[in-house]
Image 1: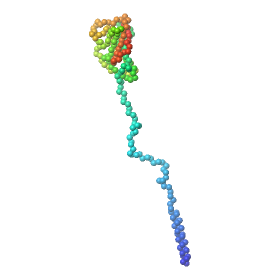
Image 2 (image 1 turned 180 degrees about the horizontal axis):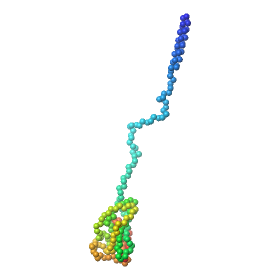
Image 3 (image 1 turned 45 degrees about the vertical axis):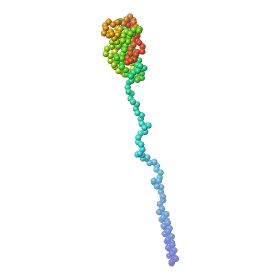
Image 4 (image 1 turned 120 degrees about the vertical axis):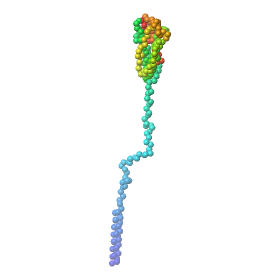
Length: 207
């Protein structure tokens, strides 16, 4: 009886051990990949660095605009061409020549000059004899600053009339000044304005 009881106890112990072993193997969890360890499909957005310099790149800054054009500059002899002008080439005995000045700005920029009567001179000669100067008896001359456009030509607004007599500063009020000979006599007109002289005398005839 004792032996039988011992055998029964051993059988029970063996059964208990197997049961415990079976339970232990079933209770061990199978490791699964961690969600955090899986590679991300997209890279995380970069966080701006608050310490980064936000100033614009000087090289990328727009260049400063150039200074505006200061406007027309004084005319020079290299730019201005002055020409003497008469209303006719030949005058009858009862006609008085009407004289004008034409000037051209041959430069590429506008320029300014004084075109007033204070800067104008008309001179009439015959051979080596100077017959008349507009400045000998000029009255109330005035200044007139004008802009001459590049490539433009301007002419005196009102002609100066020569009365066909000899002028001098001493005979301005005289009524018997010497008259210039006619009969086909040749005379030449030269002019200047603003300090610029006409390049070629203009010839005309008096009958």
